[in-house]
Image: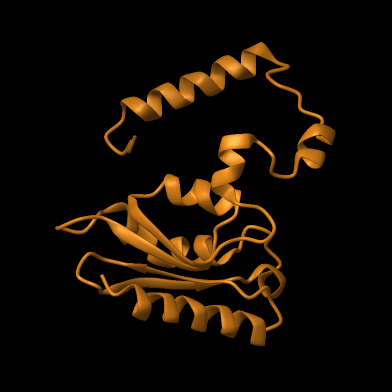
Length: 156
């Protein structure tokens, strides 16, 4: 795989994001043959969507095709910067086999976060969480998930 070529494309997307007034992050998803499935860039400010990070943008742009891994291997996601925890979660939920980034995070490493639980510890500690306050709704949601997992469209 041509890491240099694909990382350059991700960085070009990051430059495009910066020119649009967004955070400078870009991503590209590539098949095992080097073909580009999709590109993405940070669009949090321009799109008014806090989840519109470059990696998520590229995953969304990949559409239904991303759910079908190509013959000969899975997808590779190239990112201009180390993905945040949200983006890493999205990547892990896709059939993306390889993750490559051009520059590590100076703010929060998603991988270190998983190991230490240190990401935004101040926010996690201050976040009020209420779990399963209504048992009937909990049971109803569990039944929905169980029905989905038994269905043909479920992808573990």
